[in-house]
Image (cartoon, rainbow, N blue to C red; front, side, top):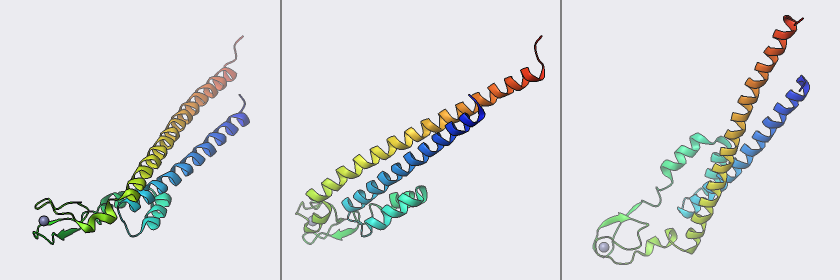
Length: 159
Ligand SMILES: [Zn+2]
């Protein structure tokens, strides 16, 4: 393998890695959008864009706030017990909680399912990216090793 071929190989791997990472980001954004929808978040598109573009930091912030709407407390109109708004029934008296409807219906179940699928796809792609990175590091050290061999032999020719 000559030097140009090697550089071309590296460039191809880097481009592939970048593309896979971009696709992983898109799937991650889709996962966040669907999760936010499932959790009755007010800004699903904003969170999807933030996590899709900036990744880790908004991702961590999102993980911290994703249940905030979900866990908002209300007082049971029947017994006065304070409980999360998303609970279908009051944990104290068991009366049906009308306000839980936006948090638990067939649409949110659908969003939840989609969020999970998109997250798994995104994680698999990130895993593939890591494998590519490892291959690249190995390739790099192998070529460095082979080049140092060549220079050694050209420097001290055999007779
Ligand atoms: Zn109650």
